[in-house]
Every structure is written in structure tokens, then in C-alpha cells.
Length: 523
Ligand code: SAM
Image (cartoon, rainbow, N blue to C red; front, side):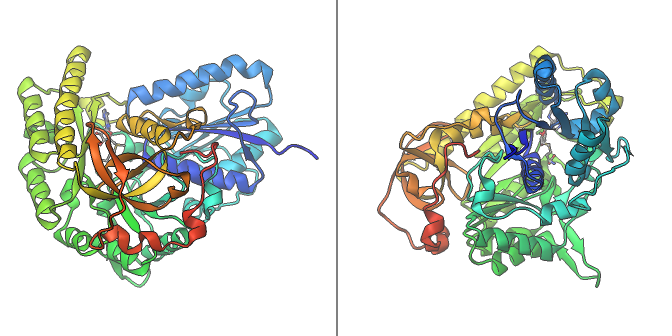
């Protein structure tokens, strides 16, 4: 019997990349590939890249350097660089990294199996790029299994088993579902509109159907994804429009068997009262919002082209908390953007203190070629100042997060158990550093030591002792101790029928609730 071809898939960057990797992996598995965690012996290496910050690109170059050194031992190995960096760098990446055989942008991922087959058959490089920076593809000779990008999403492999060894940052009982591709916002610092192309919204029926099928396969929590997820607006062939609020209501009401529904990332200006009301009315929509502010200074927000003022952002936070007093909110902030003064930075700290975020992803500004800021605004805050502001802001946020967590001590929270604690804490650390490597196969080995980790509806991380058969279930945990990033607790015998998770969480069929993560499972 001939051995099946192997694939090593590594994912850097955001949730969108994690989902892209899952879909690409599914389509390659369908053509016979087996996963491997051996970078050097794999038949095909796929690196799903991120371009949001230079740091993320540096990691890819380091991985390519490793591959170059080991190429002699595996001369037939095919190396594919996919995702945002492939799109942004284009052929210049091929010049600098001669061992790369395939470049495939985020809008062309449905072609990857065909591109790999082409390279195997012809030993010629294959390129498929189509963002706003370039539109260049070599001819595809092999018939693609998926004929368009949309079919990559709708053709996803379902069922808990399809998640085994997948590059994921969370448990097998959670899934991402894309509702919008691309971005039209053109924030001056951001490369995403150029690498992922213009906003395209998926039909609401397809989204509801995908969520329904995931729930039927045992998924407990679905996260709807979009760069500006709440800007969703789809008009079907009959002219019927679906807003984000209407989509949320549909998914919630039409898939009652799904215990938890979330969405990221929201754009502050696009949040309607109607969407907040749907959240408030819908017990299975998680009490969690991720709404990046980026800065607490109006002049900086203007230079960033964010399209709102600090006052408007804070008014939104107040509206959200008025509609859902228990909502947890997280943010993104950039420090050291072009022209940011000490006074601007102090205003950002004030915004943090006002918003009392659950957590905040803090980034040092990294100028990105191709963006407006790179072309028109000087990167004039010295690196040492960026680093100091980054550390100061992390310290302020740590105090806020700790105070938020302390208020939870002695309370019983409902936790969706994701897996052994070590793994998810690693995942959280990578999340804190989004734009970096999310998870590599090597990182995803975890030893179960009786400690479990899960998340509340508000996305707070909870660690507690429990049996592995609780993985994939929603259980009540009494919070006993806290750090800024984690709450620790004990399984509680108490149930609080008023809590929405309990309305459905424990009603899952037993065979789904009892699924145990194999140690090689990627989370
Ligand atoms: N679409 C979302 C938004 O802006 O509302 C997030 C997109 S981006 C993939 C995730 C985060 O990376 C942003 O919210 C921003 O804080 C950060 N980011 C984007 N471009 C950056 C840059 N050039 N330098 C530093 N951080 C950046």
C-alpha cells in the first residue's frame, strides 16, 4: 500500500486565517492528504500568513529560512505560502525565497489543491493572487475541486472528527463561520482591504444552513466572522435585504439547538441599536463584544480614518452597557501611530479606564507598505517610545482586567469547557499577540493534568479541575481566585436556571458531550 501524501499546515494571524486554514485543510484532506507535524519531511508545507504587522511577516521569513536549510533532504517537497503576505509581497517573495513553489492569496484559496497538483505534474511555480494590490495568476491546469471561494466555505467538512489535528486555537466544539469577506473601511494603517479585497457578504440562507449543520454535528459555539462583522448587509436576488441585526436574529431563532452564538470583530460606527436589542433579547447570543477603538485621541482617530470620534465611541460603549449591563467588551489599541503625542497617548489610557475592557489587544504601530499611512504619514514615534507606551498600556489594562475579575469572585459562571488548561492558556497568550503565530502543530501537544479550561459567555477564561469527559459541555463553576487574564474556580453543584447557557447546554446528546480530545488534536 502506498503511503498517503502528507501536509504540514501552519497558521499565523487572525481568526479569519484560522478559518481559512481549516477550510483549506478540509479540501486537501478530501483529495487524500494526511496531516503531519514534521515540517521537514512533509510532502507539502502550507504556511498561512499574516501581513498586519511586520512582526508576523518576520515569523514567516524565519520559517522559510528553516525550510531552505532542510530542502536538500526532501527535494520534492512543495512549499506553498498562502494568505495575506502572499498577496502583499507577490512575486518579490518568490525572488527572495526560491524554495517557494506556490503563492496563493486569501481570495484564491479554493484553487490550492489544483495549484499543488499542477506543481507536482509540471514542476513549475504556480501563482494565484487577486487582491487590490495585484491581480495575477498563472494558468491553472488541474480541475479545482471547489470552483469558487464561496464553495470553499459551503463545502466545509462537518462533524467533530473533521476537526482532529486541525490548526485551531480553541476546542473542537467551537467553530468559526464567515459571514463577510474583505473590508471597505480603509483605515490608513491597515493592509487588510488590500490583501483581502472588497467587502462581500454571504447569503443569509447559506450562513443559517452552515450554522445548523455545525450544531447538528455537535458544535456548541459558533463565532460569526467578518473584518467588520456588524457591517453585514446582504441583498438576495429578489431584492430582500438582511441586516446584521436580522441575521443575528435568524441564526439565533432558526438554530435553537446551538447553545452559544458569538461574532467578531465589530466596527464601532456600524453598531445599530437594533443589533444591540437583538443581542439583549436573545439568551443564546453571548454577552461579548470586540469593538476596537484604536486610539483615545480625536486627531489620531482622524489620521487613522476611523470615521468616529472618541465621544461617539464612548457613547456606543454606554449604549451597549445600557442594553446589556452584563456585557463584556474587549478592544484593540494601537500605540505610537504617526504623530501620536504624549497627550494623545494619555487620552488613550483615559479611554481604557472609561471602557473597563475585559481585555485589550495592544499593538505597536507597524507601518505597512501599500497603506495610506505608509505613503503619506511619517512613522515618527521612536521604537523605544512605542515600546514604553505599549508596556504602560498593558499595565493599565492588567489593573482593569484584574479589577473586573475580582468582582467575579464567589460568583457561579457557566463555562463551555474547551480542553486541558495548558493548551487553551497558550492559545490565549497567542491571541493576546494577534498577528503572531496562532498555533503550530508542535505547540498543540498538551498533557491533560486534570485541569480544564473554558470560557464564559462573556469570553472570560476559567481554569478548574475536572474530568476530561466534561470537555464540550457547559458547566457551572464557582470563581475562587483570579489573575488579570484568568479566573480560577471549582465545579459547582449549583445550577441557576436563569442563566441562558443552562437552558440548552446540558441538553446535548450524551455521545457528543462525552467526546474526548485526542492528544494530537489541535487547539
Ligand atoms: N477589522 C478590524 C478593525 O480594524 O476594526 C481589525 C483588523 S486587524 C486584522 C486587527 C488589529 O490589528 C486592528 O484592530 C489593529 O489594532 C491592529 N493593526 C492593524 N494594522 C496595524 C498596523 N499597521 N500596526 C499595528 N497594529 C495594526
